[in-house]
Amino acid sequence: MSVRIVDVREITKPISSPIRNAYIDFTKMTTSLVAVVTDVMRDGKRVVGYGFNSNGRYGQGGLIRERFAARILEADPKKLLNEVGDNLDPDKVWGAMMTNEKPGGHGERSVAVGTIDMAVWDAVAKIAGKPLFRLLAERHGRQANPRVFVYAAGGYYYPGKGLSMLRGEMRSYLDRGYNVVKMKIGGADIGEDRMRIEAVLEEIGKDAQLAVDANGRFNLETGIAYAKMLRDYPLFWYEEVGDPLDYALQAALAEFYPGPMATGENLFSHQDARNLIRYGGMRPDRDWLQFDCALSYGLCEYQRTLDVLKTHGWSPSRCIPHGGHQMSLNIAAGLGLGGNESYPDLFQPYGGFPDGVRVENGHITMPDLPGIGFEGKSDLYKEMKALAE
Image (cartoon, rainbow, N blue to C red; front, side, top):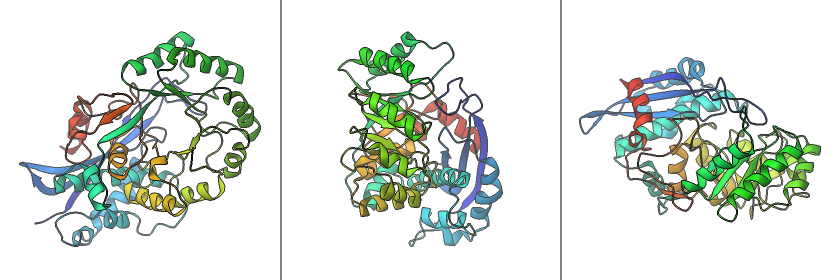
């Protein structure tokens, strides 16, 4: 059977919103949507794999079209196949993309490669006729668990958004089945943020837990001041306090904040993940790691990151990826991660779950759809299909 990538297509799409966190606003946010078109037919249709990059990093059209897609299409098709020759080998495709790339510099290129990598894995699982999470579990000798913990991310700063609107937003997440919710901090002064936190905690009561996210805004002095304030409350976690590469700052916070902390969404390689574990003072019994495969060279690299964590005594169950996309849901179900982020109302149609999937007691159950399962989300698949055709 012939298996060949015949085209790699990209289109940059807006996912703009008037919201802001402590660092950026999303009024001009974009994403790259990618289709990896193969010559394989399934059920009378050509197999196409799809991918897109997570919010917070912009679309990568230039890099995708000029460097990484071109290398795939220029490669010998036989050298991109698995040993049997009946499917693509994602690691070989990844290797073709990274040909002639120097080590280090894990900035925007990690997003471009991660976006294509998502589409490649989608195609590989579709060619195999399996949901990606089941394919991953088989490859790693694991038992797939289609039930995945998800939390609702929101609580952004928004023009004219007072405490009543914030409380209403968080209540709506509980009404939809979530039992962990997240809000932004650091975009106001510490006194106002305390009032916002207390308003949310009063609203959710004992029905849910609250996580807070500073989006890397604080210096050490401010991070410690917030830590002293936040430890008065039973929070799910205190997230990304300072610059993602300031491991000393992260390590210092453990003295002032005994509760769970979370970080990692802006680290884009297994080398950066290793440095966080070595030097960031993260505690494997309580803290959480948020590496996002779509921003960090994709699933091929994410598996290397999980190997690094294992070497340093960390369980994959301490990983709850950033990004709110179905790729990470599949990784969570297939490789035993602790769960996944979710954006119930934002960045649509790219976030969320296949149609009909509901959150129950903070968990969703993965449907048995081939590949990543994008075809099960009608509004998203409409966008994808238009690109492929």
